Image (cartoon, rainbow, N blue to C red):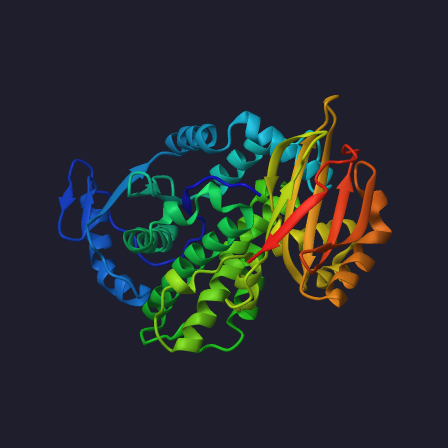
Length: 405
């Protein structure tokens, strides 16, 4: 599901706290900040972080503090710019027809609450600046600062705004966020672990690192009421970059035995690639045409992550495995001449067997969709496909679909 383009720091780690340098500033080859104490600490961290990140620092990092009220105002502006009311209404309509959110869900308000509740610091690509909230407990500051410093270094190498542009689509954006956040998490955790243990730590060498990390991170997520009460599809898309993204980058480190960054030819193009680590499994891009009888209001894809949420929502946890053969998907939200909204969704699968597993898992539960749902097997340029209609689309709507890699 759509998110706003701000790189967040929501996890902390114990360690450093320095006095706040009111009325002082610092400017060096590494850091520019109006808070001298914070700037000095950041400058002491950066050389090690740059080495661990597998990237280079090309310019000083700007660091400032913000109040919780300033964060709230900033998030409102970002939502207005990137997820305005009209767009939010269309996305809600589509996801409500999928049965993933309630028709009366206020997505903007929910996202605002989620970010306001969780954010301890953030990196803002538009201004190339790192911001820490001034209400953070002392034991949280080091982890947040480390995490956001990695984002600042990433942006000088990889252009974070371009990697998460809306034009890339929902699933590809989530995959990019996973690379970005997973990389920052792993660098931060290794740095903190070394300081705590007083010896060199290599997180890339740990077997089943994700299995060790996931219970702790999922437990922390339960401490946030707004996150716990959000629709599952929102929770999943917000937690995925931290949980699965960290695992993705750790596997990359393990395979290369180097501090490789997850960008350029190592950047995942889908949430499935993040889950499996197989970058050769390129998703199929689908083009859905609506020749007549309706107007396309929105078009995007779910991706494997949200397809698994769809299966879990309608068919239960045991059905999630039926999403593993996902090959690509695209939905269109269609409005008929009479003003009725409906959904047409195409998916393609790696094999005919994978398609059958998906159909067999979901077909018995079509009655759980909020409007009449119909599903049929289709051929998409020689690929095993499925067409799902929810609502009452015009008879000719979205009957043409083409697939390409």
